[in-house]
Image 1 (cartoon, one colour):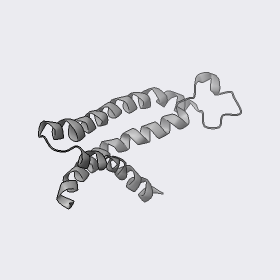
Image 2 (cartoon, rainbow, N blue to C red):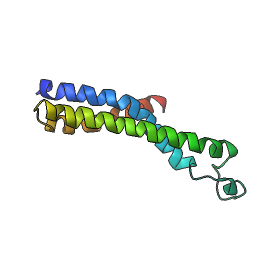
Image 3 (cartoon, rainbow, N blue to C red):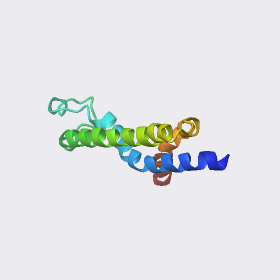
Image 4 (cartoon, rainbow, N blue to C red):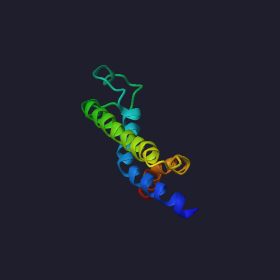
Length: 111
C-alpha cells in the first residue's frame, strides 16, 4: 500500500514546490491586480497604490507562466507517464491534492 502510493505522493509533493509560486501570485493578483490608475483617487479602495498598479502586469505574467509549467508537470507526471507505462491512474490522481501541501506548510510556518 505504501509502495503503491509513496512514489505518486513524493512526485506530487515535488510538483508542489513550483506550485507555491502559482498560489502566491494568484493570491496577490486577486487582492491587488484589479487596481488601475483611475482607482488611485477612489477613497473606497484601500489597497491600491502605484506600487500595486506597477507590479500587476509582471505578476500576471509570472502567474500564467508558472501556472502553465505546473499544469504541464501534472499532466506529464500524473497522466501521461502512468499511461505510457500501463500503470493505474488511481494512485496518481488520489495523491494529486498533495500538490498544495508545500504551500500549506509554508503558509503555516510563516503565520
